[in-house]
Picture 1: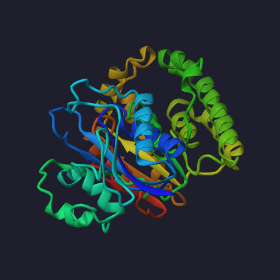
Picture 2: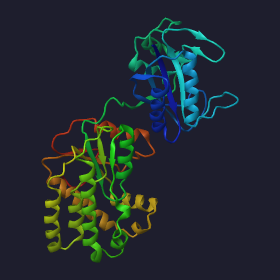
Picture 3: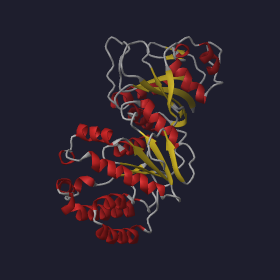
Picture 4: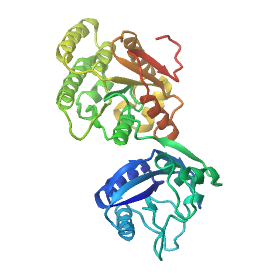
Length: 383
């Protein structure tokens, strides 16, 4: 068996997904992945582009020769949509996989040069390599990875993006927030990043929802009752059963959402009946280990709602969004036996800005006490 160090790179719209797919194919066609570095974000090297790269280094164990590994790499890149330029110039790419080291071998052929000829010149390769092999000695330059990194003159920016070895400390995480804050998008991103089981609210199939936004008084009870039934059905189906393929669950709603919305829409006498039904139905279901609430101003929420363009949402009023926000915050004042993390996302764009997304990932790796914890939050009311 041979030891091979590979570096993965992508500056596509779905770079994280590309790296994940590449890791799967490497393990299937080249060999077992024994170590993997954190993911780094770096400026393009050797050409100009607005799209930065994500890079990661893997140490694999393989029975293949170096030439066979190269052949498998080319097939993996092709499988993932890589189109190589005829001019062999640096350019944007969906995936790029290079061999940095193969055992302690020195190889130089027409198609392959090992160690990689540019390794010592590239900070984006040395930084992730240094995380898993700081004392690995370059067989030609006779320097360790850390020594090569110390002497590297590359001035391109390379910054930590995601350390996949530091997973969230909580196996069941719920993302919550008012309509338009991006809770479902964030839940989907987290599930993809950590290969978690994803439980999303099935609002699209609720026949009462469009009618509710047209006539809240008439359709409040049927819409809230149907939501409660659907949420119970989903959570009963997905949460109690063990899952061999996922060690985390990410959802985009809490069961108490039913009470919060119903309390905002139903008359007092009807709400009392609804509340009794709720507590009977949900008493035995597990609670999330961490509830993440995304806070944004009603004005910001309205902008997002207009932007995503669902016809039946366009008439939602600022007062309604504000009342919902207040209801959530009032509910959190009563929380004593759950962990609640409130994040102000007014000035965050975790969808388009990788730095903002990484900030959220870092927050999920912290320990939180029972009760409410607030991060970057600017709300007039005390909680």
